[in-house]
Length: 80
Image (cartoon, rainbow, N blue to C red; front, side, top):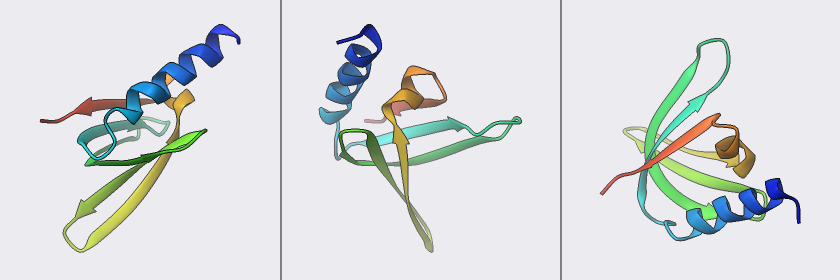
């Protein structure tokens, strides 16, 4: 495997350990647009992971690729 593929699989393994836990998500959406949400790491899949955001009167599922973490487009922080 290439070093990038090793890094992506390592990111996935790290996230799998925290499925079901609350996280703080910060996603850079371009042109100075930043999305900040708190949610639950719902599931990991071979190419993506899903975060469930529950806000009053608004439920949402956001999906991101592991490459987003590698390129620092998405930052995750575990909340206790």
